[in-house]
Amino acid sequence: MKIALIGLGNMGLPMAANLLKAGHQVAGYDLLPGNCAKHAANGGRVATSVADAAGDAEVVVTMLPAGRHVESVFTGQGGVFDAVRGRTPLLIDSSTIDVATVRRLAAEAGAAGLDLLDAPVSGGVGGATAGTLTFMVGGTQGGFARAEPVLRAMGKTIIHAGASGAGQAAKACNNMMLAVNMIGVAEGFLLADKLGLDRQKLFDIASTATSQSWAMTSYCPAPGPVPAAPSNRGYAPGFATALMLKDLTLAQGAAEGAGAPTPLGSHAQRIYAAMAEAGESGQDFSVVFRWLAGQTRDEAV
Ligand code: NAD
Image 1 (tube, rainbow, N blue to C red):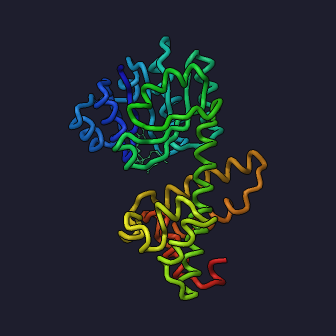
Image 2: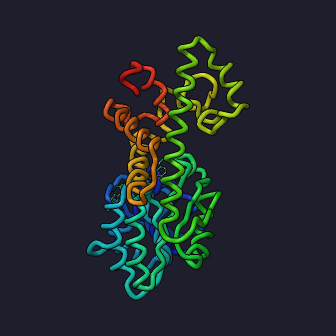
Image 3: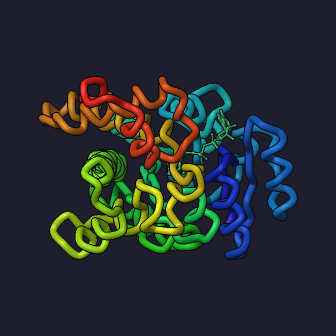
């Protein structure tokens, strides 16, 4: 198929590479020439603009930083909506953005007879490179059926979460739960340290007991028990604190809009904001363990 991929950053570039490997023709576009050059080196066509990329595409995938970038790429002059007028390619936004923006864009697309799906991902750069991402998809059943074979070239788990916005809703809920969970594990291991309890002993007990979680068994924020975890390589990401803060902020925006009480989600956002302010933005989000260890009890509550 002819696929346009707009946004060839940390995630978009390896996603485009997997589409190429699956035999698709991929026209890539990014504002940064260096990223375009990497796409060319992978065997892709470099488009000269959004319109050039989307002009004859059967599927348009966007992988951009935030809602305002997605909005401008779709609705701006020379944007995707302009470029595909008179045709009905499938539109897939895989960026992590707010539910309201994607619903607005999907409605605008629908009025022009186009299907626009929200399909944010989980799995990070490692998953994007290995082609094992999880896609959580919001949109019509028909759109999902068209998207699935394309997404399959970039991911392993492809789930239709529901109508437009449901993919972004799933992403916001998942990452809010993850952040709360990660802070909880970090607090438990810190308390263990302070009580003189051996970390490995706590891990051996808790990882088979009722507090067992992915944050502990695959990604333990305290150095030691899980050798492959970022905590054992100086908290190099992984999934950066800045991205977790972005997702927690999106979750709080969604919770406010929906009137959902999320006291721990809100507290987690404040903790990640404080960590970012303290210079931890580029570190893996499990650095919350080290950050808490540097706080007094009064500072951190
Ligand atoms: P990134 O900043 O590395 O890449 C985004 C790219 O978009 C950049 O190369 C930028 O130049 C390009 N861009 C911005 N505006 C553009 C425009 N108008 N036209 C063309 N290109 C434009 O970000 P990333 O890490 O690849 O993340 C992309 C999205 O995926 C984000 O929404 C992020 O939250 C989400 N995400 C990231 C991860 C991760 O681990 N990096 C994991 C899951 C989800």
